[in-house]
Image 1 (tube, rainbow, N blue to C red):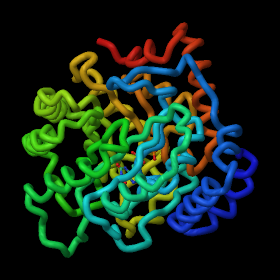
Image 2 (image 1 turned 90 degrees about the vertical axis):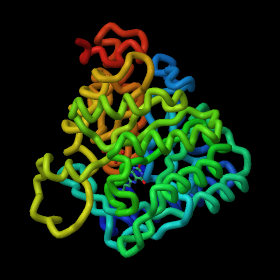
Image 3 (image 1 turned 90 degrees about the horizontal axis):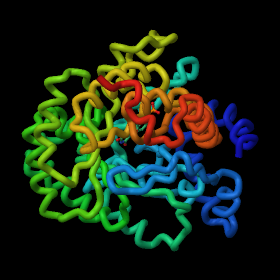
Length: 373
Ligand SMILES: Cc1cc2nc3c(=O)[nH]c(=O)nc-3n(C[C@H](O)[C@H](O)[C@H](O)COP(=O)(O)O)c2cc1C
């Protein structure tokens, strides 16, 4: 796999970023259809790391690394992704109605910064089509990988009439009803930075509480994570936690990309994309995300909520830093684009070494160890 990715990367990087992604997903679809394809990937990629197992939100994760939302938006290659040695795969974001997202181009690579500029605007096939795809899927061995669905309100485009609060809540209800039967965990994307629909609605903790009140009626069996805009403002975090704490199904937080990153991060080629709308993902946002993770961890009631962290993880050291600041789980996106699937193995092996260096026998001992009062 390593050699294959190294050979393909220069060729893929000559294509426009979205086209390269689509071709990669299509190639994965072909591999998973070929008899023996999944077994081949499993032999190349799957390992067990007993020191990295953990129980988070009542679920057993084989290791802390997950694939972040946005890579497999339409659940097209879940069987293959489950062979890659990941602890979890988060599919989506998925909305109740299909959406074409924002006009192209809407994804750019910034290779000298190991970053991506994203303005997708939530294109996806819609919850009904995706749940049909999941139903049709042949049984496959998951190798202990947990599957989550990231759900968001439909992006009807900038010209559409504003969505009413009731319709916005119903959008989440409809998607969750369709997708929950296939999920180990669910993530509510409450802060997509590329979509005008419902923009700012969930900045109000009261609106999050309204949504959760409606979702409670679904009696979901799976733990729910909230993907919210990153902040290190203590008051905002405290209000969010106070609004969410009564809802037992919510077991953690994940910090999303944000327009704020673009202003706060240094890019080596900053003039190049000044006219392109979008938000930055990847290495340049690592520090600003870490600061938000650290503040969030200190404000959370101990043991009640877990933190799922992403943002510029492309080495074991990057992942370990987030764990030591309080993250229980880590998600990857941009790092995989620039380093390939081998990164999963490299990070997990490296984490075992870093844990041993610090005298820990188990990953869970390290969570928050450098961020305690
Ligand atoms: C191309 C792209 C598409 C994304 N799409 C989504 C999405 O649909 N839903 C979502 O919650 N996050 C989405 N994200 C955010 C990622 O899930 C992740 O939180 C973020 O990229 C930070 O990780 P990274 O620095 O490793 O890329 C997307 C990110 C990228 C780069």
